[in-house]
Length: 324
Length: 303
Image (cartoon, rainbow over all chains, first blue to last red; front, side, top):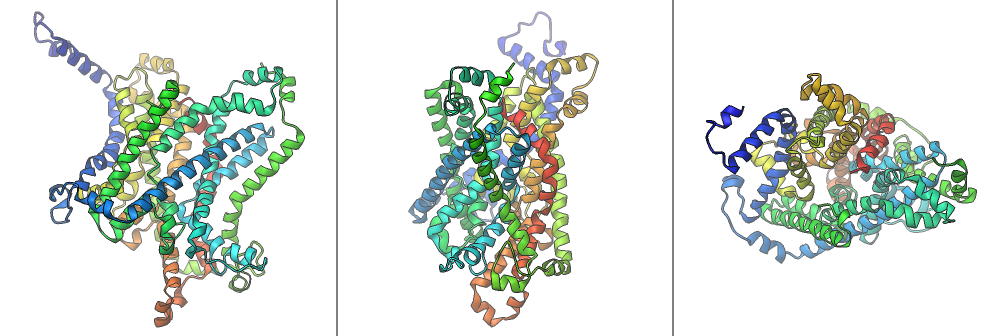
């Protein structure tokens, strides 16, 4: 190895050569590990990096004859169309409002469940509750849309036929009444998400040193004081990491939740249309690549900026807890 | 050591324990009952559905929905074949590739560790969005209507790779790897013979995640699959529900063509399809469950 890099003993090695030499030596020494990484790295390139690079299509007028690489550039025209389109404000408002509601509600409920479940002493009970609460996370949105449909079916649904009718109330055409959907979507999202969300916090609480609690008991701290002064501060780093990662998704929405569960019902668009369902509809149904790619790009860039803002804010408060 | 007296002293009172248990039992019921409702409706007799609506206690039971489904056996079998195929291939590839990526970036002596960690981490912060991915998949990679389009998008889940990396870091002692190397084992041998066997909990967890991800996926089929015999189960279910909804909303269409309504799957049949779609997950889930919390916890906490 050495001889191939350094041609003659009296050649003067520059700093750069030394660096290059070291790089190749360690590259060769660890070539097996790099070899292991390559397949998954290639998948990341195909799935993540090529589409990032492909964002430039938002600045093009795509036609299928020239393909995405050779279609003509049109500057910001796609964005002009998007911003002049009346639905932009509605979809952004819906997306951000739902994301923030879901984030805060699920965080509070998950932490509450984790703290509460930690107080139970029966191992069997804890395990069974956990299994039941996590289960919804493993159902697909298609299945969940069937479950919701079973409750909200206009004539036979459980709510109309088995709750409202016996109470003597008029049935509701759920899939046409938009005023209920913000609540329905929030409940469905919480139902699916809080169990699995709690698992992470349960794990974090299990990792807290019991001596803290022992000392607190000796000092006469109540259960509530222990939760506020020991448990919550101890799990704060994980809460913050999860929040930073979630902030990046404030402009994203769960496509399945907003498309499948309301069954793409046009009457509900004012409250169910988000950036993702809008982009999908404009792309697949209206076939308007320009406007959908502009919307998708705005979404990606805003999400990226949000992560930096949140992370910066966290670093200002407590630099240990920032993500990077 | 924690004394028993402390433990007893720090317990919540029996009254609060009872209240907490009641709350958790209610929450558990809230998670299970919707699934039960769908299963019960699928076994409900049509007359009972018409008179009573959907109910947990139907007056008449029936298995007509399932005998009708048997007649559609070939469609459902085809969808099952597709779903099982992509789930098996996808899960094996996914767990293998993620472990192969996670192991080197868990090694403190690997010089490109921070580069590849960032390479992975960056994909969690920024993405190209739906349109760009759709165009790359269909225009550049030409994956329209191909099974690869159902497998490739879900192969690497960055967050899960980080969980695996943390698991390797915390459970596999560097001295173990060092001693194996002194004995002359190659990196690949160390990985397959030492690291993987010691990581079964996290591998099982990831296998469960991947299985569920692939089994439950309908979105990639919605984007990329056109041919009916390539539909996975979830997408077939989605089509059934959408078609039913479409016909119900357009009753004028039905008045012109009464045949449509006759062929419309009745409601217990729809719910039977839903049951068949979630069935495998409900079967697999309890077996993985015990690994799953452990694998996730060890990997997630010390991140």
